[in-house]
Image 1: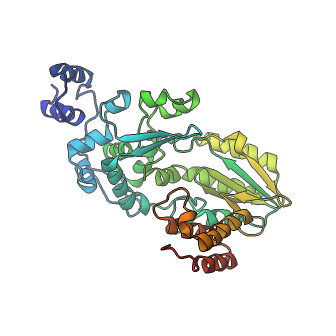
Image 2: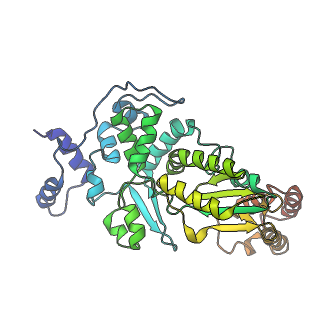
Image 3: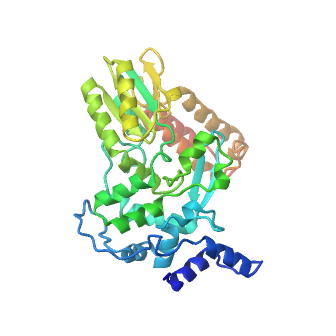
Length: 377
């Protein structure tokens, strides 16, 4: 017999205010709710698993709810362990959606879920180290540490992964939490909090191939937990590509969906073919139109940095920042803030930091020019 209390709680979560058309909407929503017995409700379960890394040992779903600041009913609604919200289009959504000009979908969690995900990032995911080859979204690493191993090499190869976050399914995310030692139902809830299925109305606005990747539960691009989870899911990919690189006597690093290889005596075609096989075997896909082979007599660039001699911003970018500062000195910063940025000074100093991170002489020159700007003008 279905639990009336759980049905009432779910109904209130999905319809927190009285409907305009009275009981009709209530009956319609009730008719679409799955039976409680057929769903997979959140229940307490003691783990017999071995814990790995210094993660909180949540053996019961009640402990998860308390740690992320939710009631059990709220945890049920956000994690959706029965999959009801992934097959229907409920009146309340947990995400905001924005389609970029390149048809890439940004799925940003709303405030409550975003805070839950941030707590998970701080308390769980940040305590699990990614592979040494991963440099994106890792504390202490950056685009500069990603690019540095490839500086001064005869050949640099950049390979792009297609639809990196959508390629990571909820099943693979759940496997990460299983590996950390969480019991099955806790892993299911944690994975549910970090993944989403894109609603049909949003899918209809996307090309068919993009929509097909987003239909199933996946990592949303825009959630604070997605980069860390993607790195952990890609751990075996990084391990295999590191082994391949050693076999070819080349260097390998990864920054999110950018793979970089470099060396002096590089069998490029064999390497690219082998990388494609490993990437496909690990559940990802290479974007063939974005593969680049860059030799030393041409400009070699990775993640916006030129690496022919050392990782540094392109000369044109340095010249742009220098010209911007010179105009700020002559005409005042307001004359150069054409986009109306509310924190223009911080924006300018951010560009100085980017351009000067790997070139001290450029940094000193730009800081000296910035010191002459009357920022109150």
